Length: 576
Image (cartoon, rainbow, N blue to C red; front, side, top):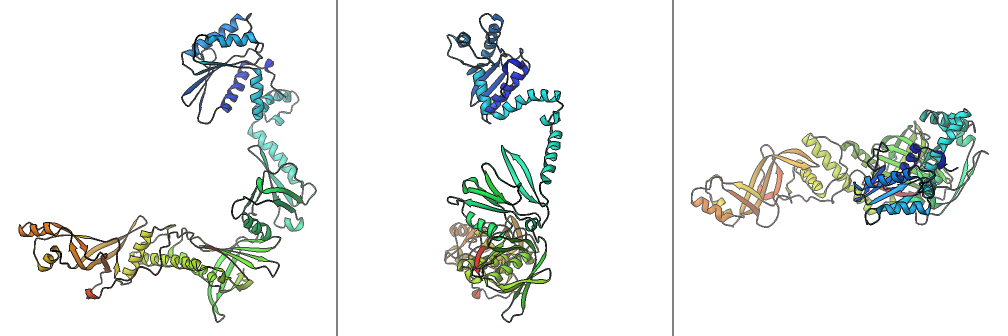
């Protein structure tokens, strides 16, 4: 049903054209609709985009403006002249009729003798074409005509006369009818951006057992995102509690087998599988018990079940511990290896909890023997497939654990406690290592400290002259309030000695001249190690009698920096 242009009013005509103009221009354009016909200054709609201006003039002349209608032609001409005062690039006349050659020539002749503005006329054919391209607009305005008929037949609700209240009432009534289709299943229906989304929903936790629904998806995963094939195997094969989205490009065919009312007709935009909420078994308490070489309990970790799943190939168990998530997929076929996914997320954890998560992860990597208890009853036992982890996995875990240990010791010493940061820069890692070694009584070379500035008190000495003359000498200073800059914090370590066995003055000549002139007091001298090695640090201890000649720097290694802390250990392994 099309709009009957001959039987609408000027205001309704204006509304239709205004709606179309809004659709025609990109989001960055400015569309202004002027209020008050006649006093609009020659503008009904003004559009500005990229420095160009369009002025639309709307004239509701359903039977045109032939030469016999002097008043109509005069009205069009007057609107055009007033529009010229705004210097438009385009002037557009919109009318709801099919123009005769004479009428079209009249409009084009309005700008005779001038190159500016460009004149266009849009008639009924243009309006019908644009409304066909925007079918929702056409349906919306046609609906107004049907609404009047609905009032006559007392069917206002069908046309949502009451606005959103009627929407709720209509959708609620439809939902109640859908719920009566089956004792065990229902369908949630949503309309999003022109697509109807159907979500199959169980009415109770045992719906899949009492009234099973089977589906077959023929898919082509070529060119799909990496990991999609593995995700399909986990979700479909083992029922893991994760969302699976198959794009339309991957779905070749989808068939459902279940209640008679359940069928799919038409094209499939995409297939989205979402886990139940709450998931089967969610929240139940579990204990993961690791046994030592003697078969005795070595460690016990308490956690909760995220989900218990079942698929075509076997079962899955998704467990959550502090900072660690373990997903086990066990196939019904004994010849198929059980797979284990262990992932660490230290975000927001204290150092103690982070170390606990790393310990659990370490047991999995080592291939420890375990027992799994669910609500106090043994559910499974075996050995984790530690042999499947690579050398890089072990090294990454060792780096991560060392970094968290460093942070834990520094926090205890400084009494400044905070969550493990999600990331560390290499410089932060190095400063953290230096701080821990200092706290534990080691001497450490600080690669960031390559020079030291001292202020002379005016007194001369052989050691000072040796340094200033470039011969070099040992130098030690005490920094009474040494702080560690770490992750936008200042962590107080206390008094620290700065020492180097052989330093030279970078500007010794000026200092010597100041000494000779008796004005050395307050003069600043920059000291740099003669051999290029950085200064050494060690923490001040009460009654310290350290023999400086024995101060050998402790290496910062054994391992390199762990740049990412929060999610640095996620591995998949296979085994029996």
